[in-house]
Structure formats: structure tokens, C-alpha cells
Image (cartoon, rainbow, N blue to C red; front, side, top):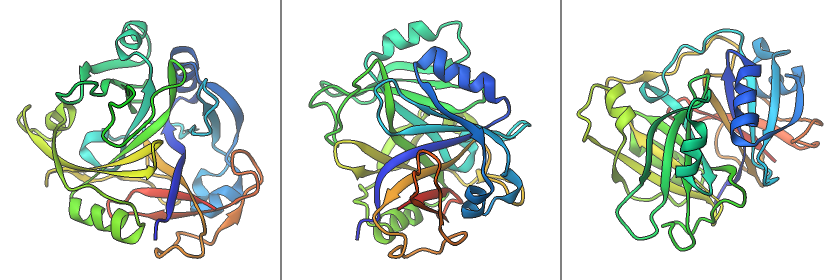
Length: 297
């Protein structure tokens, strides 16, 4: 039975909240829709009591899509480099013109390290750039043309639009396939060989190394999940007791029912009144690579 319905929030822990938020608003056209401190009841649902009271902002794309980015200030460096630790590693966002965005980002606080380039050799192939935010978060910006997606995905409605893909890395692709396919009910593709230059550099692999990846549609024509297998010289992502993992900490998915989930929860569900939960119940589970999934009923 399919458990995950849609991607709703992507959470990043950052050292400097104001600098990171400014990059999203000034460079990417996102707007701050809520500014607060992490409520104790939300941290209770996450089982992260050490994070209670941390400053945070909730950002929404210019399109108004209800796919949010949440930034939480950790007050210190997160201490990891995404391609060499297991867990959520990249946030991929729809854009109308990656070449123009690359020009606009020159000299900004968001630094490009890859692209613009087509993701594969095919007419109407997705075209993308790869960047690092001020906090070091990997942000990919991808153009999808009508008829150009292998998964029927729709393209951007504004120049920079919503998150449509979240990238997860771990040491055992088959374990990820079983968890997201057999346990959570997504239709996971067979492994696909794919070149990832930054991951190759980070793991001391040859630049032309092909990493096995799988893709799983979450909501038809709307969003997907990418599963990447990393070499043996990668490690679990460290995090302190009672805290969220560092960096790209957690991805929030809507679900039909928390009661029907076939996986253990970190803590009992809690109803959260604040936006974007609006009274819905929330719980967190952990996947096989140590990744955290916030599930919103």
C-alpha cells in the first residue's frame, strides 16, 4: 500500500539563519511565510528536545505552491559535507531557465559548481545547474520541458518554483529500494548508472565513475525521490543527542494515516496547530540510511 502522498517540507539546519534566508529570498524569489522558534510540542513529535526554541523560518516559492523550505538555526557549523555522509543530501527545485539563473547567481551568495547542462542525451532532456547555498546545502535547479520528463513531471510555473525532488544517499541501494518500495509502497525504478561529479570527488573516485541510483515517483506528475548508492568509504551523518541531523535534516511527506504505517515512530504523534501543519498530526520515522522522514497526516 502506498504510504507517502506528497513532499510538503524540506528542512535544513544552518549556522546563520539570516544569511541563508536572505539567499532564498533575494536570489531565488522565495518569501518568508512564518518566522518563529521551534515549539516544544513539535520537538516532542520529533524527539529532539535539544532543538526546542531554535529560531526558524518557513519559506514558500513565488508560485505559491505548498511545498515549503524550513531553515532552522543550529548556532554552529553543521560539520558535514553532503556527498560523503548518509541521509538527505540534495534539494532539487524547478526553474524555467537554468542558464539565466546561472547568470543571475554570479557573484551572489549561492555558488554554482556544476552546469548548466542536460542531464542525459535526449531531445527535451531536463537541463540543470548544481549549486551550494551559503550554509553548504546542495541545491539543484532543473528545467523540465513539456514531454521531456521520463516520469511525466510538470515544469516550473514561475522562474524559480518548488522542490520537486529530494536526493537520498546511503551505502546499500537494495536496502533503500526495499524500504521505499516494499515498506512504503512507492514504485521504485531499477538501478540506473549516473555520473555525479561532486560525489566522485568527495569519495576519491574517478571523475567518470557511474553511481547506481533509483528513482521513485511520490506524487504523479508532481514530485519524485532519488536514491543514490555511495561507496564503502562513506559514513553515517553525525548528530547530537536530542537533535535533528545536520544539514539537510529531514523531508516531510503527507500520508493518509499514521496508524497504518508499517514502521516504528520516533515518538507518539502530536497535533501541531501552527502553519503549515494547521492542526494535523505529525510523527517522524527513520529510514535505512539514517534519514529522517516527518510524516504529516
